[in-house]
Amino acid sequence: MSDKVVLITGGAGGIGAELARRLVDRGDHVLLFGRTAATLETLASQLGGPDKARAIVGDARSADDLARAVEQGIEQFGRIDGLAHCVGSIVLRPLHLTKPEEFRETIEQNLVSAFLACRAVLGPMRKAGSGSIVLVSSVAAGQGLNNHESIAAAKAGIEGMVKAAAITYARQGIRVNAVAPGLTETGLSAALLSSDAARQMSEAMHPLGRIGRPADVAAGIAYLLGDDASWVTGQILAIDGGLSAGYAPPRAVARA
Image (cartoon, rainbow, N blue to C red; front, side, top):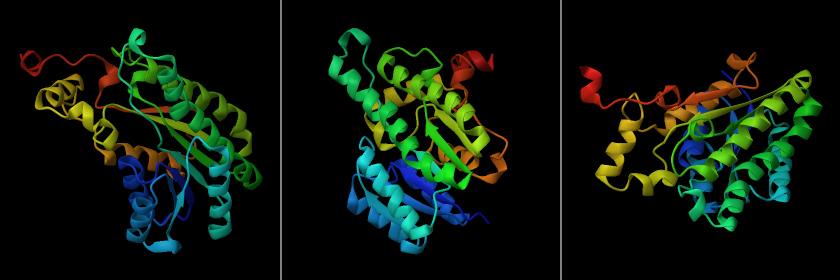
């Protein structure tokens, strides 16, 4: 059994909630950080209440809110061992149709929030001489996908930050990694999968022939947070149904 204290930003989202359940099941304590109090509190109650999970309302784009979450976590559990930053957005629009303010918002929501979350936990982790940080990138950061210019830029920034921070903090016992999912069945992706035709096209893009599930991504994050990954840092773990490996031909052609 594990016994870590993990801050999950976006704790009420599809991936964040699934990760919280997985961590509590293995013996960890979780701080569920997000903007919707009722959803966070319901999930915290389902996970066993204040002894196992605490709901903290705040905005991941606010350094003050994140600092407060870390303070409350230390007050309750005595330390912060891990961060899973599960905050993000999906913007699919070609560059020439993307307004400058939309691009800036994408960077704020994804890259800036990740920077602020890391900064909030690094103080107590450096003091303890240990910790694990896992950020969420996207297959779009490394694979050219049409209409993904804004989100690709933001997530590529996350991957660059992961690799630099992994080197900066390795000697202080802090590991920094990321997962890079393909399209995953969450609230954020609902609009992209709203029709049968859109779903079938998205499934066909992935060599394994299906959309990702929150549990797929949560399992990878849980691994990187845990002791089984104690010799893993600076890595981007692709959880994308094979999309980053290359184009999947239509199934009829593949069978031939």
